[in-house]
Amino acid sequence: MKKIALAMSGILVAFVGIFVVATTSVKAIELSDEQEEAIVTHCDTIKENLKNLQHRDSRARVYLGRHYEIILNKFITPLNVRMVENNLIDDDLINSQTIFSKTRTNFIIDYIEYQKVLENLVSMDCKNEPAKFYGKLEEARLKRSVVSKDVVKLRTLAGEQIELVNALEETL
Image (cartoon, rainbow, N blue to C red; front, side, top):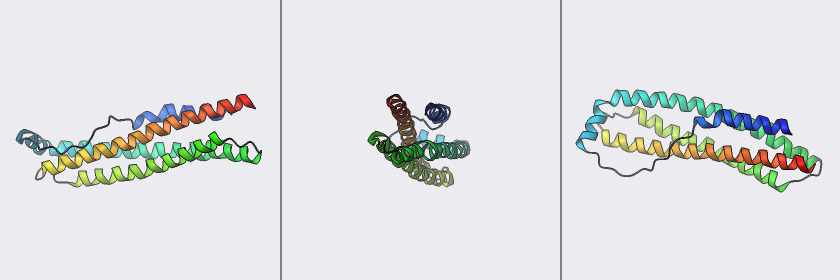
């Protein structure tokens, strides 16, 4: 069981920092002429940076998604199945699995929503519609912060799972 705990913690420490970002709230903002001009002037650079971000986030999502799947399907679920088969039902472990699974599903859904907004943003004409572009940028920031919160929650849940497994090991 220590191997399971060590493997889970190693995966989390190595990969969770990829998505952690600062949260930004969306506000209806009137852009000044200078702000609009800055967006128009730097439109190509902004869009190139957004495409790079899109690429990095896509790779991170695949990477994290695989690891969350491994944690759930190779560690958490098999442990709970073995526990039930041996009539050692632990409600905390079962609840942990349920919450982890739901949060993982939320991560997938939230990322898809973020990706759609980002795709829309990248395809917008920021030279002719800078205010609309900025509004969509704020929406993308908010969606990305939701994904970030999912990542932090999954990391926390995996850490709690490790603690539960360590506590279980002490009782056996």
